[in-house]
Image (cartoon, one colour):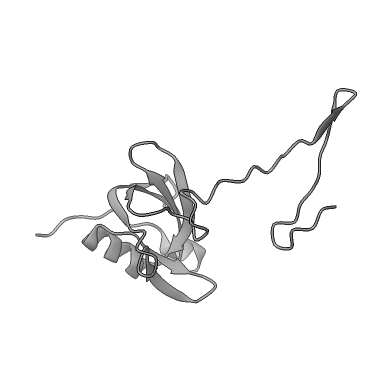
Amino acid sequence: MKRNVLMPNFAKRNGLVTIIAQDKNTREILMVAFTDEIGFLETMATGEAVYYSTSRGKRWRKGEESGNIQKVSQVLIDCDGDAVIYMVEQIGEGACHTSKRSCFYRSVLRPTTKMKGRLEIRVISVTRNIQV
């Protein structure tokens, strides 16, 4: 069966588009990743999320190692064609490589103390876990 597919603009960002994986029932954002054109078409053909790892320089099917698969039920594309939302059913432990359900389990602002109506803020480096 042939079907028409509205394609993202892969040329805009060196062959990649941003993918937001969102739980189809709860609407929770589970993760953000990239995919290339082949990964996008594979996702459309199989119904399972395929991403592109910029650090490893290769395509990967979500859950191929962990078993935490994402079944894609709907695909939304933004007005510029450079970002896509996969509405997914998350199967398994979670979407994050840390075994959390979502990759977004940390708050950027973690207030520690209120001092005279002002908020004291500690800046923590995500990559080195250093407090400044």
